[in-house]
Structures are given as structure tokens and as C-alpha cells.
Length: 356
Ligand SMILES: Cc1cc2nc3c(=O)[nH]c(=O)nc-3n(C[C@H](O)[C@H](O)[C@H](O)COP(=O)(O)OP(=O)(O)OC[C@H]3O[C@@H](n4cnc5c(N)ncnc54)[C@H](O)[C@@H]3O)c2cc1C
Image 1 (cartoon, helix red, strand yellow):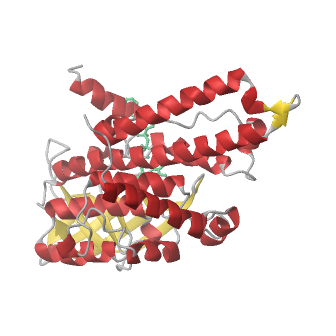
Image 2 (cartoon, rainbow, N blue to C red):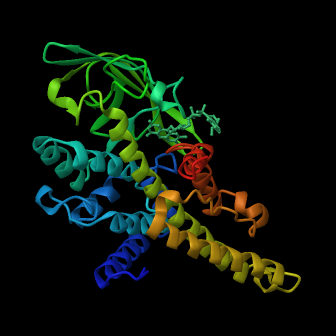
């Protein structure tokens, strides 16, 4: 199997690397872009990427995108993560873009995909206080009324809700014996009446939010795809979400490796660089091998990657100090085993494919 990139893809990666070096290459730049690391997303940086045509990488050109595929999106995620670009809004936006491409009407595609390519952020809300891993048991309801829906319920951990243009809300339109039947996806603008968005303070900042939907009205054409077929639509998207996460974590892992390698070459103890000790050399060699294996898996069967490449014990106490980016890299990877479905649930899925 040939995993080599095309010239265009190699140029794309090089351009992103150069951009990140110029725009967010120093801690001072990143602090400024993230308001002292309290925000995961910089709108100004994101808009510059939109102007370069990068945010529509997977979007067909007739909707304002570049017409690329998921490998291109993975390269983008990997390289922007490696470059520590604060564009936390991209992942959920890519998920919503995928769902729109798969299930949207022509009008929805023109509106949503054009906006996304131009720098708009979109969010998706599945999780509820009582429905996390068992997301099929969600209870937020969308009652059919004349001309549309009235939505009631509560969502939690909705990434990017505060900065998004819309939230794609997964809700129950029909109740029956099978919890996976009767779900639907409905778009709600973030400035909708009777929608309250409360940020949640997490290790990663304030990028997630609780949503309170107290009789939020949505028109008929706010439904994405088929009403009552939301579960199937959601599953198609979640598989892509795992691929996106794999590429993101690969980029973060690569950056953590780059920084750790530079550190062990520079830091001296016992009169020599600590990287000259064989014990650390072996650990780095193992990490380099694991990263390459993860890269191959991401490019080929990325949805199966549940690897956590954050085993960075080479910087001792300084790896936990906020003076170094390593501390943020470790925090960023810790949560990767939770969102998009926890690692236990991913293993359950893999076991199922093995007939267990
Ligand atoms: C930073 C962040 C961003 C997120 N963004 C979004 C978002 O944008 N939109 C959205 O809808 N959701 C989002 N989520 C929610 C995420 O999808 C859920 O947190 C995740 O699915 C787990 O649900 P839970 O937190 O309720 O944990 P629970 O389901 O309560 O699980 C708790 C623990 O029990 C384990 N467990 C549960 N069931 C099983 C089982 N059958 N077998 C083995 N172990 C099991 C889990 O693996 C976990 O370790 C986000 C979460 C985080 C932390």
C-alpha cells in the first residue's frame, strides 16, 4: 500500500507549517490569541485560514470549498495541532459539515457549507446529563407543531456552542420501544429564543457548555436529513469524529515528541545532555516508532486508532509546569479518551466487529 502524499498534499502541509510558525509559533503569540489560554479558539486566526481556503478543505468547490477528502482534513488537523494553532472550533465544524454533505438539502448545503468555508463555526449537541456513553437514551424532545418543532430538554458538554452559528441538536421526535428509533437532528441558531448557553469550566478551558432548551421553536426545514432517522445519521458522523480525533492527537503527540526531543538535547545533568543517557534514548526511540505506527493507522484505518501518544515522562517536573507547552499538550490529550465516545466504548465497538 502506498502512503506517500501527493505533491499538492506535501505543499499543503508545508504551507500550514509555515503559517503556524509565523502566526502562533511563540508562547507570547499563543497567549495573545487565546486570551491567556482561557479560549481554545481564535476567530482572527481562523478567518485568516478561511481566506487561504483551508477551512473548506473537504467541502466541494461548488459550495465554496477546495473539494478535498478526509486525508486532506487529517493532514490539516495533524499539522495545525502540531503547530499549536488555537482553532478549537474546527473539529465540531468538520463533523457538522460532514453531516450536512451527507444528509442536507441543496439549500442547507449552500448556506451551511458556504459559511463553514468562510470561517463560521458549527456545534453538535448529543450528550445529556443522563445520556453520555448511552447516547441513544437521550430525552430532549422535539414536538411536532404546525410548521415545525418545539424543543425541550437539556444538553451538556456541547463544544463550541458559545462561538457557533448553529447547534445541531440531536433530539427525540418519536417515542417507541427501540431507543435508537425516533431520533432526529435539528438545527437551532445560537441566538434562538428560549435557548440558554452556560459555559462549563473544564481542564481545557471553557470550550464546552450546558444548553437549556425551554420550548425552542424550529421551522420544518431546520431538520437535517430524515426525521426519526437521526441515529443512523449520527453513527455515520461519529465514525468520522474518531478519525478527526486521531489526526488531532497525532499532531499533538508529534509536537510533544518534537519538544521533548529538543529538551533532552539541551538539558544537561551529570555533566552531559540527558538525551545522551541510553534509558531516555530508548524511550524516545519507542515513541518515534509508536508515532509512525499511529500515523500509518490514522492515514489508513484511522477510525480504529484509540492510541494515547501522551506518554511524555522525559521532562520530569517541568513537563507539568505551565512554563512549557508540554503541560498543555498533556491536558489536551487526556480528554481525547472521553469525547467522541470513551475508550472503553471504542473497545466495545471493536470487540463487536470481532463477533464478541
Ligand atoms: C471536552 C469535551 C468535549 C465534548 N464535546 C461534546 C460535543 O461537542 N457534543 C456532545 O454531544 N458531547 C460532547 N462531549 C461529551 C462526550 O461525548 C461524553 O462525555 C462521552 O460520551 C462520555 O459520556 P459521559 O461523560 O456521560 O460518561 P459516562 O457515560 O457516564 O461514562 C463514565 C465512565 O463509564 C464508562 N462506561 C460507560 N458505559 C460503559 C460500558 N458499557 N462499558 C464500559 N465502560 C463504560 C465510560 O467509558 C467512562 O469511563 C464532550 C466531552 C468532553 C469531555
